[in-house]
Image (cartoon, rainbow, N blue to C red; front, side, top):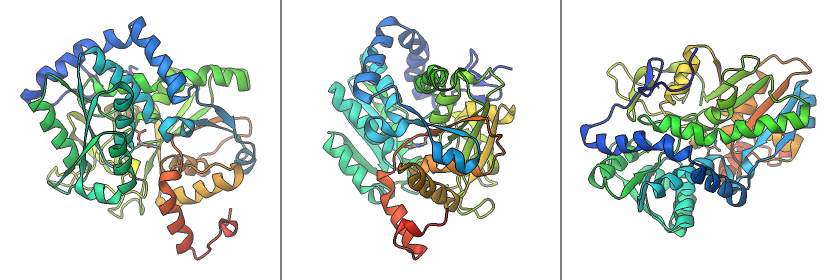
Length: 404
Ligand SMILES: *Cc1c(COP(=O)(O)O)cnc(C)c1O
């Protein structure tokens, strides 16, 4: 079975580049150049340099002893939370800014929902001295004030979008409009394995540094270079795609992707795309998305801003359809509980997104010798308000009372 992109930009029936004619030239420029650039010695050297010295890679692989005892298996955490800017997103933005430079672009545009990708983009633009414009729904600008401030401090221009629902989808439309008007000098820096070909393939290759490191880190820790399970949360799917990348053809490795089920499947308040969605086109590619009977995209919901996306990358849609990746889901409450368990057992405050991956530990049957890697995609600083609210709602102000 072929799990990677084919010559036409498809993963089975998913993927492709469904774009307005006005964007053909921009997309074709990227399609024709991305592989040549990222496979060049010169790019690889510079990418590696910044991953090591700027982002702080390799991120540690940490054996979580107390959590392992709790679940009766061998759990290792891939510590993407320790990267500069606090998540895996920096791997992608460093890679794409180096591509933009090689294409001679001087202005970077991006869209952002919660602001995490916007911050990672503003960061690398400052690093490279490039102009940065971030489109963000007006509602999100209000909800995510700290990240808006971060982007502005880093020198980015944040443009609140007032059309539609004033959230991520509308910000994306504005970014595309900008790109159409400024094709010569502008590069569109997409934040996950979504969008028209070649973005899903490009972003998964850049994030595949995660599985590349797992190979030698597992060899060091357990004496063999693959685990029995890799578990990752999925918004668009970039931390999942990057950590699965080098293991796709090794069927001894069970790959698990965890979606956000918000208030619960069937409540109308979820972001569980594979579980609840149907095929359609979103952001320029054919994939699975959440839509109503008229094909209108439905507004997703999750407590975690990074998983709150109505689609999923086309490769993950294909990996789900072929059965190569097993999809699980976790509700807001299950994720919160798993997050507190990690805090109390390991002294690590995770972001709410990977808390969904941690919650799946309670839903899978492991044997005691299984090697289980959980991708800890980000740290929890940004989620303090949600954690505090949860504790207050449970009317126990100290985490000491949390029932493990
Ligand atoms: C953005 C984000 C995600 C979701 O994005 P993917 O592309 O699915 O990886 C997950 N975790 C964290 C910490 C994030 O910031």
